[in-house]
Image (cartoon, rainbow, N blue to C red; front, top):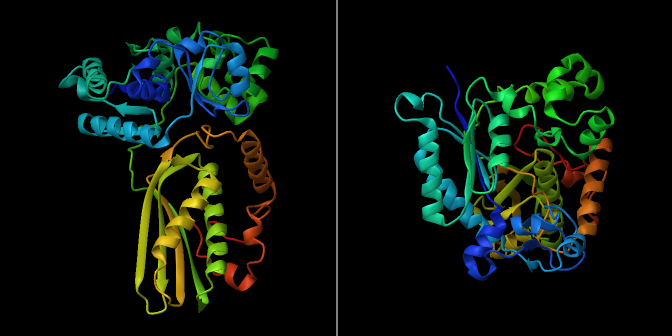
Length: 401
């Protein structure tokens, strides 16, 4: 059966939300992100992009390119709320959808043609989202996720298009190889050094040659360039979570020690989030007292995988939850409402040095093990306590060493 896969993406999502909240920003170049020169651009309007500004660019550079740009700090909570509203509309309208990030969605409409034209259905869904939220959104429809995503990028802003079955290669051929989602800056430069600029060139090359240059990724890139992508639309499930618990050999009331353990647990969980390119929007803390009474408390947070933000929330929840002056037997931390996403760091704060620090720490952990780098708070945890961690409930168990 011919597949029909839709990719929808909210146009300049953060900027669009800010314009909903402040219409005076309409039609003006807008930068959302850290407000000082050390900040980073999280999102920019199309008016700003005309000057060469793009997301993840240092704010100082962006303001040099576009001096008239209006810089807005950004509001995680508002973005999460609008994202959830769009998600609810899509959930009501399609049989299967995937939410890879806060502002984009995949939908599998395969088989819907016999009841309702897939392109017509996607178009009416897009209009409903625009009408009910006021946010601009674009979509691409094709036989697979890769072509649909690239198609969406080509029709932005506020556009829609269908690539007919069999026309995938024709559509992709004249585009820059940068348009293929898996091609980052290093891969792009490598391919350009080989004289490859357009997708058509990759299409005409033997797959084996791409494998020699890029290994397994070369074969994947060649298939994507030829419009081949059999990856399924993964049903979105907000209840996905990762968690870890610590049961103490001896019940304790040492609050300072408990917090050190929780910091170490949280640090391991956030590293796991970044490794799997996931973000959490819900934090839960669990306490079990010596009488076996168990209490939990949770808090919704803006999507993040940032240690400093999540450690702060875990401590805050622990302080609210820890009311009894009783010995504690077990503590636990859980992150839920996970989504795939690459907004791994808080781009809205002026923290470029901290971002570089996290990236360096993760590289060390990847090379030497997860215990290679840790906060000072976890250094004095003795082996008796740290050996009691039950591990993270996910694909790859993690232990505090």
